[in-house]
Image: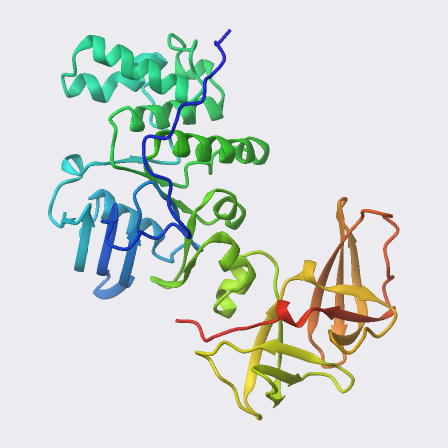
Length: 392
């Protein structure tokens, strides 16, 4: 039986604020105007288009987006497996264009763990240290310390075939971290695990990152994964960053319709601006509706402008009565009711023809607050309306 794990203090500084490098601090990883083009069947395909990023030392940074958005290509350029067509990749301020992968102070963990099946856990983790001719006593100490960090102490002599998927992934992490890289690059490392184990490993990954203080750059298409673990997220689309911010910023204040739709469930309501009192836009939606959204000072609007705004399903209240005049109010008919266990989802068709999804918690009763075909009022605090910008 493995001895109890003791929590170790982080070896690196915790990222401040949103995780951006403090003023004057050197980023662990920096991409400046990075472009990557591929030539396919005589055509030029741009995978990454003018990317600028600065990732802080000790930050858990995620590249999030759908397949083909450029996130894995970006990771491979940081690792040295691909060279930029234009722009610079910098590690701790030093340009590494042209520097081979084995000479960059970063390690990569892929979805396939690539463990050596004929070696035990200790030998798998020690492999890189032995190749670098690290003294035996130091190898023993460093491997033992790393196995304790990833909660595998006591399994040193086990072969990979005797380990679960989550344990194998932790061996791969230990092997990458034992070399003490400045940054660890992770390309969909949880993709091969089932849902329950994947969720458990999210917490493990975040714990390991905090305890080691190593900068993590994490590639995923799973929004929940990125929200749960990241200090900051870059949402990518078409080779560009649509939005960069903390998980809370990206979820609560999506910058574009793409981000609103890709991160969680979001309702988009369209209409023309009727008036602009006190920095807020009053939007004409349905004949009896009142939809208000605060305006960003950098994104003004005038009467007659057409706007798209988003509001999250859990921010909306559903009921038979029209709410008071301080709240946004939209009238509609319940088109679908879906019981989800902890919550119930209502799909409501508004008088203007929009579909709005509402989540209500089943805290008091699982019977629901409305039935299919009911006429209802949807309401929410105007602060939870957020005007969307155009996609990049």
